[in-house]
Image (cartoon, rainbow, N blue to C red; front, side):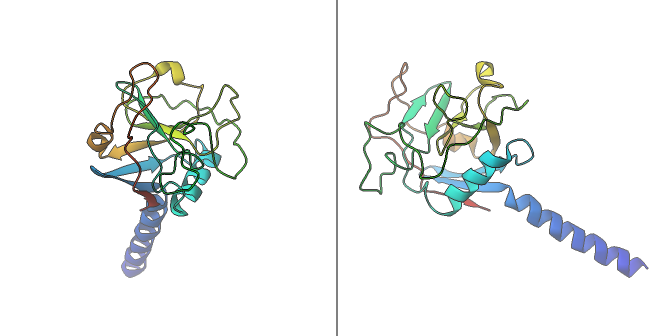
Length: 184
Protein backbone atom coordinates (compact mmCIF):
# COMPACT_ATOMS: atom_id res chain seq x y z
CA UNK A 1 0.00 0.00 0.00
CA UNK A 2 2.85 2.41 0.83
CA UNK A 3 4.33 1.73 -2.62
CA UNK A 4 1.06 2.65 -4.32
CA UNK A 5 0.75 5.87 -2.32
CA UNK A 6 4.38 6.75 -3.04
CA UNK A 7 3.93 6.09 -6.78
CA UNK A 8 0.73 8.14 -6.78
CA UNK A 9 2.49 11.08 -5.09
CA UNK A 10 5.37 10.93 -7.57
CA UNK A 11 2.96 10.78 -10.50
CA UNK A 12 0.85 13.64 -9.12
CA UNK A 13 3.89 15.86 -8.55
CA UNK A 14 5.14 15.20 -12.10
CA UNK A 15 1.73 15.98 -13.62
CA UNK A 16 1.37 19.07 -11.43
CA UNK A 17 4.85 20.30 -12.46
CA UNK A 18 3.93 19.86 -16.14
CA UNK A 19 0.68 21.79 -15.67
CA UNK A 20 2.46 24.59 -13.80
CA UNK A 21 5.19 24.82 -16.45
CA UNK A 22 2.55 25.26 -19.16
CA UNK A 23 1.65 28.61 -17.62
CA UNK A 24 5.21 29.90 -17.35
CA UNK A 25 6.79 31.81 -20.24
CA UNK A 26 10.40 32.89 -20.72
CA UNK A 27 10.89 36.33 -22.29
CA UNK A 28 14.43 36.77 -23.55
CA UNK A 29 15.72 40.33 -23.62
CA UNK A 30 19.19 41.65 -24.43
CA UNK A 31 19.71 42.12 -20.69
CA UNK A 32 18.59 38.67 -19.48
CA UNK A 33 15.70 36.24 -19.15
CA UNK A 34 12.35 37.21 -17.66
CA UNK A 35 10.01 34.59 -16.23
CA UNK A 36 6.30 35.28 -16.62
CA UNK A 37 3.47 33.46 -14.88
CA UNK A 38 0.20 33.43 -16.85
CA UNK A 39 -3.31 33.44 -15.36
CA UNK A 40 -5.52 31.25 -17.60
CA UNK A 41 -8.16 31.04 -14.87
CA UNK A 42 -8.56 34.85 -14.98
CA UNK A 43 -8.11 35.67 -18.69
CA UNK A 44 -8.17 32.40 -20.67
CA UNK A 45 -8.48 33.94 -24.14
CA UNK A 46 -5.69 36.45 -23.62
CA UNK A 47 -3.40 33.74 -22.21
CA UNK A 48 -4.18 31.45 -25.14
CA UNK A 49 -3.44 34.23 -27.66
CA UNK A 50 -0.21 35.22 -25.89
CA UNK A 51 1.00 31.62 -25.83
CA UNK A 52 0.03 31.06 -29.47
CA UNK A 53 1.87 34.16 -30.73
CA UNK A 54 4.84 33.54 -28.44
CA UNK A 55 5.37 29.88 -29.21
CA UNK A 56 4.98 30.43 -32.97
CA UNK A 57 7.77 33.05 -32.87
CA UNK A 58 5.54 36.01 -33.83
CA UNK A 59 6.98 38.18 -31.03
CA UNK A 60 10.62 37.48 -31.94
CA UNK A 61 12.19 40.81 -32.94
CA UNK A 62 9.20 42.95 -31.91
CA UNK A 63 10.22 46.32 -30.46
CA UNK A 64 9.14 48.04 -27.25
CA UNK A 65 7.65 50.98 -29.15
CA UNK A 66 6.14 52.85 -26.19
CA UNK A 67 7.96 52.95 -22.86
CA UNK A 68 7.14 55.45 -20.13
CA UNK A 69 9.47 55.54 -17.12
CA UNK A 70 7.59 54.80 -13.90
CA UNK A 71 4.55 53.50 -15.82
CA UNK A 72 4.92 50.72 -18.40
CA UNK A 73 6.70 49.18 -21.42
CA UNK A 74 4.45 48.39 -24.40
CA UNK A 75 5.24 45.93 -27.19
CA UNK A 76 3.59 43.19 -29.22
CA UNK A 77 2.74 44.85 -32.55
CA UNK A 78 3.58 41.85 -34.72
CA UNK A 79 2.56 43.66 -37.93
CA UNK A 80 4.49 46.96 -37.88
CA UNK A 81 6.68 46.47 -34.79
CA UNK A 82 8.60 43.38 -35.85
CA UNK A 83 12.12 44.53 -36.69
CA UNK A 84 12.69 41.24 -38.60
CA UNK A 85 9.74 41.82 -40.95
CA UNK A 86 9.62 43.68 -44.29
CA UNK A 87 6.52 45.45 -42.89
CA UNK A 88 8.52 46.92 -39.98
CA UNK A 89 7.74 50.62 -39.65
CA UNK A 90 8.66 52.24 -36.35
CA UNK A 91 6.38 55.21 -37.03
CA UNK A 92 3.41 52.80 -37.34
CA UNK A 93 4.44 50.49 -34.48
CA UNK A 94 1.59 50.40 -32.00
CA UNK A 95 -1.12 50.62 -34.65
CA UNK A 96 -1.01 47.00 -35.83
CA UNK A 97 -1.79 43.59 -34.49
CA UNK A 98 -1.84 40.01 -35.73
CA UNK A 99 -3.90 38.35 -38.45
CA UNK A 100 -6.10 36.88 -35.72
CA UNK A 101 -9.41 38.47 -34.66
CA UNK A 102 -9.53 40.93 -31.78
CA UNK A 103 -10.30 39.59 -28.32
CA UNK A 104 -13.24 40.41 -26.09
CA UNK A 105 -12.18 42.05 -22.84
CA UNK A 106 -11.52 39.87 -19.80
CA UNK A 107 -11.45 42.43 -17.01
CA UNK A 108 -10.61 40.88 -13.64
CA UNK A 109 -9.78 41.73 -10.06
CA UNK A 110 -6.04 41.58 -10.83
CA UNK A 111 -4.51 44.90 -9.78
CA UNK A 112 -2.08 46.55 -12.19
CA UNK A 113 0.94 46.42 -9.90
CA UNK A 114 4.66 46.19 -10.68
CA UNK A 115 5.32 43.36 -13.14
CA UNK A 116 1.74 42.80 -14.29
CA UNK A 117 1.33 41.90 -17.98
CA UNK A 118 -1.83 43.30 -19.54
CA UNK A 119 -3.37 43.57 -22.99
CA UNK A 120 -2.96 46.88 -24.82
CA UNK A 121 -6.00 48.07 -26.77
CA UNK A 122 -7.65 51.08 -28.35
CA UNK A 123 -10.59 52.93 -26.75
CA UNK A 124 -12.77 49.92 -27.64
CA UNK A 125 -12.55 47.48 -24.69
CA UNK A 126 -12.86 44.56 -27.14
CA UNK A 127 -9.97 45.61 -29.41
CA UNK A 128 -7.01 43.78 -27.82
CA UNK A 129 -5.14 41.64 -30.33
CA UNK A 130 -1.39 41.03 -29.96
CA UNK A 131 -0.04 44.05 -28.10
CA UNK A 132 0.67 43.99 -24.39
CA UNK A 133 2.45 46.00 -21.72
CA UNK A 134 4.41 45.34 -18.56
CA UNK A 135 3.87 47.67 -15.59
CA UNK A 136 6.96 49.24 -14.02
CA UNK A 137 4.91 50.51 -11.06
CA UNK A 138 1.35 50.28 -9.75
CA UNK A 139 -1.22 51.82 -12.09
CA UNK A 140 -4.58 51.52 -10.29
CA UNK A 141 -6.33 53.66 -12.93
CA UNK A 142 -5.96 50.63 -15.28
CA UNK A 143 -7.63 48.16 -12.90
CA UNK A 144 -10.80 46.60 -14.38
CA UNK A 145 -10.19 48.65 -17.55
CA UNK A 146 -7.57 46.40 -19.19
CA UNK A 147 -7.24 42.62 -19.38
CA UNK A 148 -4.39 41.64 -17.05
CA UNK A 149 -3.29 38.09 -17.85
CA UNK A 150 0.11 37.49 -16.23
CA UNK A 151 2.95 38.74 -14.06
CA UNK A 152 6.72 38.86 -14.13
CA UNK A 153 7.86 36.54 -11.33
CA UNK A 154 11.60 36.64 -12.04
CA UNK A 155 13.86 39.05 -13.91
CA UNK A 156 11.98 42.32 -13.44
CA UNK A 157 15.38 43.99 -13.14
CA UNK A 158 15.85 43.21 -16.87
CA UNK A 159 12.48 44.77 -17.74
CA UNK A 160 13.59 47.87 -15.82
CA UNK A 161 16.53 48.20 -18.24
CA UNK A 162 14.34 48.55 -21.35
CA UNK A 163 15.13 51.86 -23.08
CA UNK A 164 12.66 54.54 -22.01
CA UNK A 165 10.91 56.84 -24.44
CA UNK A 166 9.62 60.39 -24.35
CA UNK A 167 8.14 61.02 -20.88
CA UNK A 168 4.77 62.20 -22.21
CA UNK A 169 4.16 60.00 -25.28
CA UNK A 170 6.52 57.13 -24.52
CA UNK A 171 7.76 57.07 -28.13
CA UNK A 172 11.14 55.35 -28.29
CA UNK A 173 13.77 56.00 -30.95
CA UNK A 174 16.03 53.00 -31.59
CA UNK A 175 13.95 50.80 -29.22
CA UNK A 176 14.93 47.59 -27.48
CA UNK A 177 13.26 44.42 -28.75
CA UNK A 178 12.08 41.01 -27.71
CA UNK A 179 14.59 38.30 -28.60
CA UNK A 180 12.00 35.56 -28.00
CA UNK A 181 9.15 34.42 -25.78
CA UNK A 182 8.46 30.71 -25.33
CA UNK A 183 6.71 28.38 -22.90
CA UNK A 184 9.06 27.03 -20.25
